Amino acid sequence: MKTIEITKEAARKYKDGFPQLSVRDFVKNGYEEDGSLIKLVMDKKFVAYAYTAKQRNSDGWILSLNEQQYINVDFYRKLFTMAQVKRTKFYYDEETNAFRFFNGSGDGIGGLNIDYFDGFYVFTFENRGIYYHRETLYEAFGMAINDAKGVYEKLQFNVQNDGLKRRHVQGNKAADTLEVKQNGISFAVHLNSGDFDFNFEERDLLLGLKEKYASQKIILSCFSKNAAVAVAAKVGGAFKTVSIDLSSKNILKAKENFELNNIDAEKQEIRAMDITSYLNYAQKHHIMFDVVVLDPPVFVRGKKNSFSLNKDYFDLIQLALQSVQDGGTMILTANSASISMKKFKQLVADAFNNADFHYELEETYRAGEDFAVNKSFAKGNTFKAIVLSVSKDRA
Image (cartoon, rainbow, N blue to C red):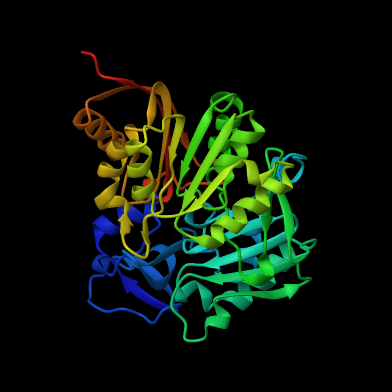
């Protein structure tokens, strides 16, 4: 293990719990190969163990501030055991069997997330560095969690062989259609075909929608993905739902999830089209909704247009406001480390003001308690949602 001298300021930062490694903190210029375990010192005194990995704005992650703690199988085993203990309530929740089991730096290993689907675990490796330690991680996981039905993995970095991006790695394979639940609502996942994406962060928001905002309402869900919003709304007593998404594959997922919850998909409106085009259509034809949900990705490209959360959300909010009933509800989400809750609220305030609408803040949501967060790393808490009551500004 190579020893690297870091600056005094960096030593203070890492000792305070900041988990993201930066080569700018090294006294001498240089970078170790991805996956290298390194020992950080300041004036030859131990500060932390870390691993190196290029990942967006990071050069790696801190693993331990304990010099006596070797980074080995036992180290990872303890982290996985603690992660399971933290989620004990989810294992015994009869209404929910899909949740985040291990949440990156919040659980001690930046760059690694693990999701739970009714006994099956999906490892998501966000960088090459932590992936180089996968055999040790899988061994440690097997020691800590001995009743896993099966394990899959997902790679968030570029690899030459697409077959390695999402695959089954050990244990049994899940059924081709695996039915999982969140708050009593059923969803279909298809792990064997690489369908690992799921609305884990939105669980509490969907529960709020079901219990407080959907009854007897007409709901518009933009960027509807697997129709989690519309399904939760219908289970909560919505009169009608309209789901709009760019992907025709997501339309098939939507229909499947409606049927799993004994909802006739044919009686719901589900369209594969550009969100802006639909909102323009709704405005032109004076179609109004009691609840409008904007749940955009960070970036998506359609056949004609693309959407960027940072560049286009302001205009999208203003456009969507034209289709909200006076006194209606707007639910807005953002799942990006680049937008803090404070910045998000300001963006919304500016958009409403520019469109000459008024709002009252009803509730805010973050990801649930299974999304453990490092208190010294606010960017790790990426998901945020706000619920607003909307009215035309008469001031």
